[in-house]
Image (tube, rainbow, N blue to C red):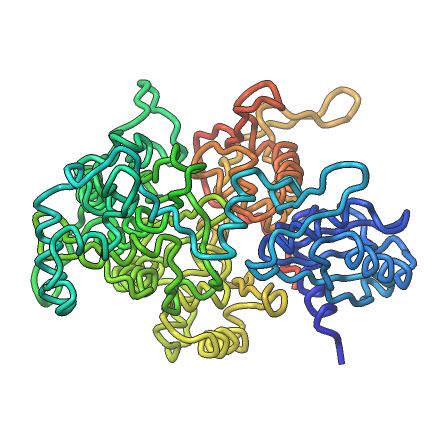
Length: 620
């Protein structure tokens, strides 16, 4: 029976060869000179991140076997992980095969939060811990060390007293509303206590040397103006005129830009005012009559904005960073300082309730704090926020949110594209299989727009359980509507060539219409051409990964770092893809200095477009 790591390697090898370099969670070394010294940095990075695979015995860019002594490599890797890492790592190591030759594959699992970070024991210098980045591996920053340590217990930053504050720094109306609510709902102990006693029990006030002081939680739940004490603990809103954030030709850089100050309830109201000013609405006519819908469901946006304010990191090292709301023509992005907190499986964020709270006191307090001008409290704090977000977007016909996080940030992206637009519904009718379930139709629509889908994304789309997602995707595979690549955590499903639509994103390209070419024979009998020849790249199929880069650049100029983040590969891989596209005349740099820090890449200028098939045979 074929081993699990061999199956994973077989599934990943086509992706590696398409990318031409390492992937975000796969590190490949040639191993010709023995075990590379740098391999321990990769083990540390994977253990401190989300895990990954290390493959020894392949060389780039073709990922062909180098003919290594696999037994010795495997033994040396195991010994080094045991003796030169703290805590020691015991990866699953197997000798596998590629093209009939041995390679070593090691699966490194993510460490439990209370064991991080994993250090490489460096000789004659300070020990370092590493994280995976688009350039390979990098050392943890001082703030990331703090984030790792804070995850080992319950942070209490929100319970700290704010020096120089007192009850006069709280909004009296908000305080009285809170007191009435808790005395009515939370029992005799609150009804028998005086106001200051209740506020101390709730964690709004805390005893200090100078008397009762307001806590960080109390200040941001009920404060008159918290930014008097923490100027950058606010929210920043910006609306950009272009999808890249670049200014318009007339120099317009921002359509709207403002800091949003106040307590969390006040900032929430200010964020919604800004979004309503800048979002558009569309009219939908149904059996119930006409209904105006916002670009993004307000209930879903509310959950994400609340999370950004309630679960952000309030540690002193991050108090100079505001939460961000960025509105682009094609997406809404909400970013908060502080990564994913607690023992949470990221793949279950939009499918199962999550109850871990970085700011436990603040989260509990906001359950009883009322939003000004309403009868609604700020949050329920039952851990179902992102499940509700996915459901709201699903009911609006939108794709689930994209979740991204590091040790220092947490980001949620809403895309404005409707999954089941008229064009997609027509396409679904053309492929037949009228007996597909509604969930399978959504999966096909998503794959049409994004090129591929996985189990996690299917669950967010449909709200189903993991085993149901596996069953329905496998059924689509049996029908040859989707094709599987990878195994287990690496499994993705993509559209086969016969379902690709020319001219549609991910499925085809639009190229310049070939101009007329005049030919005539010279005196020597040779043929010359005048005018512009037909683009030669049309006869040379490009790889799916190059195709993906070209299509992403259709959104506007981007840096190699931005492309690497979108593709989940290293910047080195992106540079190879860009060079290949540049050699075909499809993309170009925006600045003459290749190494400029502001360098971006864009498509070449075109005037007339038409659909031109450029795909070769499906590699499968």
